[in-house]
Length: 435
Image (cartoon, rainbow, N blue to C red; front, top):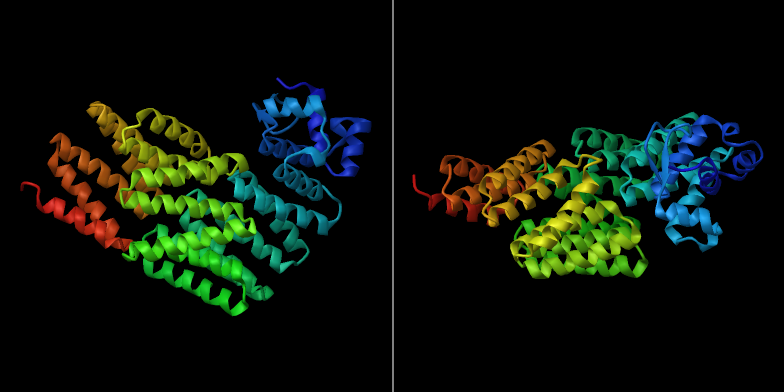
């Protein structure tokens, strides 16, 4: 367990100068409870401590390996990793007495937390920023808080709440005259509609974002919208156009140093090849994504790439790597309860058990994957999980009635999201089954 001295040393890194001097002079209790709790949460996000009690210093904490290194070496801020420096600087600003500094710090913390997939921290900071912005009548920051609250809710598959947050954000961005904010939020709404299978609305949002970005001469926003549209091109049967657009977008993101979007696009290129059953090529994209996401500590993208790579390795017979990657992905998505990604992970387990002739265990995993997919309401995942379970039932010659029901559900979901090629392939398989 962490000693009081270790906690004090680590906490001193994330407090602003006034509270840091108060901490040194008078101890932990001299710092207000809300600032102590915020500091502790920040230390957990940095990966310096692990929490084993309630969120205050009276409870139990353990210091991680990295935390012990910090305590032992006492490095200056300039000797820490760039991302760590940015997060600590943001936390120090958020601890300021100045409203302007606090706003800037909270805004930066939210952006970093969303990139890293620290959703609980991001949501708490969104609430805090919105309270401060409403008190100071800062419409633009109210919009920012709503928009990033929507990102958190979207990551947790809370689609209706996310859409409401984004609509609130658009209203406030328009009130503030922030066209870039409107452009960005339109993209996020497009992702929600796409996940729920409403492709026309999704495409309309992405095209609106793209047009607005061109009107503003905002190349960055234009490329981001194009990256979203590239995913829809593949569903429309424009595979080559989709791949070309995605590669162009990734090249741009790499050129300007936009690591989060470069990684997301790399993962999307892997998914594109996975959908064509080019599992080895897809795995290579996912491996590159995994390596970079580990280095940059982007948990959301890392988890998605691990699930996808795990499926590729399952399909090419590398059981060990599939299980290792899928286990790690589950550890990432369990806490935020991302049922969409968990459903795909459970599908991986089902496939491995089925190929290992553990039929009953495989069907248990497939059933769990379908339940989770339906709860997530992500139609592409529903289609994939129903298809995998149905095809396994057919191959095992078990319960063909259920198999047909699952394949019909999968085909219907693929049609809803515009993937006609996949839907027709399943319908042909259904027609070939005995009546």
